[in-house]
Amino acid sequence: MRHGQSSQTAVMVCMARAIAHDRTGEARFSDPTALGMLAEAERQLVSRLRSGEAPRSLVEGFRHAHLSREAPMMVARTLEIDDAVRSALTPQVVILGAGLDGRAWRMAELERSVVFEVDHPASQRDKRARAERWKPAAREVRFVPVDFARDDLSAALAAAGHDPTLPTTWIWEGVVMYLDRRDIEATLRVVQARSAPSSRLIIAYHQPAFMLFVIALIVRFMGEPIRTVLTPGQMLSLLGRHAFEVRTDRDIPSLGALLSSDVARATRAMKHLRIVVADRPGEGGRGGIAGAERIAS
Image (tube, rainbow, N blue to C red; front, side):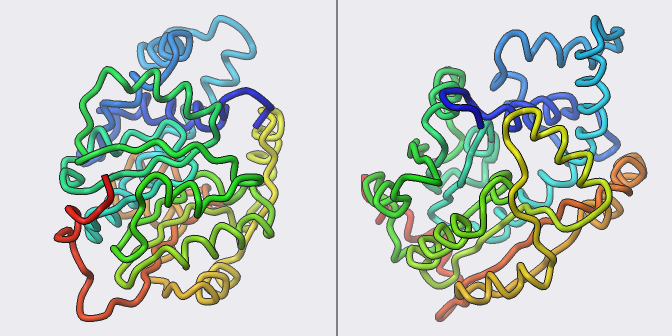
C-alpha cells in the first residue's frame, strides 16, 4: 500500500461484498456492514453498479467489470471463512490485516468473543471513523495498529490484552500475498507463540495459476504488488513447521461449486485463490468459549 494511504485492495474487497449483499443465488451470504464501511464516493459507485447504471468513464467501466467478477468470489471466500470461525468459536479472534472486515459487527456468534483488529495505522484510522456508529456483535472490539513489515506484532497484541493461554481464531484473509516470505514466517512465529491448544488459523493465499497474472497487474497498479505465491504443498509444510495441522485447503472454484449455480459458474476460473483452515492440536478438547471472561480488560 502507498505510504499514508489506506489499502486500496481492502476497499475493493469491501466494495465487492457490498455489491454481492442480498444479490446472489446463495441465501446464506449477507454483509450488511459492507456498504457502511465505504467512503461516500465508493458507496455511490457501488449503488450505480447495483442499479445497472452505465459507467461514467473508462476507469469506472474497468472498476465495474472487475468488481462484477470479484463479487461472486467474495461470496465463496467469506462464507468459507465465516463457517470456519463459527465451528471454532474461540474466546479470542484476531484478524490480521483486518481492512474493512465487518465480522465483529455482523456475526452474532461472536457475542462472547473479543475481536482484535490488527491493521496498518492508515487503514485502521479510516475504518474506526466509519465503524464507530455501530454496536459490535462481538463482546468487544480492540483495534491494534501494526505495520506488519516493521512493528512488533506480539508486543502490540500483548498490549491490547490478547491472552496466549486461551484458544484464538486467527483470520489472515488478505495479507499473505502482499508480504515476502520473511515477513510471513515472522508473523507465523508470533501466531505459533500466542496460540494455545485448540486455536485455529484461517489463511487466504494465492497459488500459481494463469489468472493470477491479470490479478497481479491490477493490484500492482493499486500500489500493492503480489510478493508471495504458494502451492498447497508449500502451505502445508509452512503451517506444519509452525505447529498447525491443515484441516481443509480448497480453491475458490471448489468452494463455489458447493454453493449456488450462479456462484459456481462465476468462480470456475478463479483457481488462483485458496482458503486453508488449520488447527493447533488441542489438549482435552477445543477449549471453547468458556474462557472469554479471562481476557484482560
